[in-house]
Length: 81
Image (cartoon, rainbow, N blue to C red):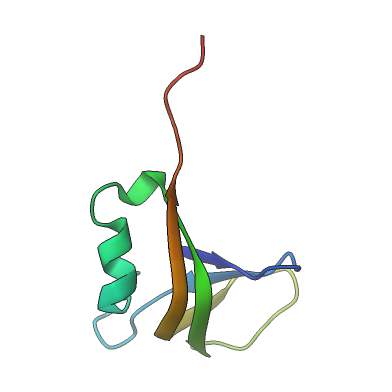
């Protein structure tokens, strides 16, 4: 999963360092992706903790501590004719 910071070009990559997996999300966020993870965009306020130093032009790895004000919308990936 990626987090795009509104108003910037910064991208954060979600990682769970304790489980050594690429994604670990609070249950309320995970539930929004359950039915269609690749067709869902979730917006909200995310509280993250950095797992590495920020370097300009590179994606920074973070873990998600909390999320609030969540909304989800589906992307229509049906081929257009």
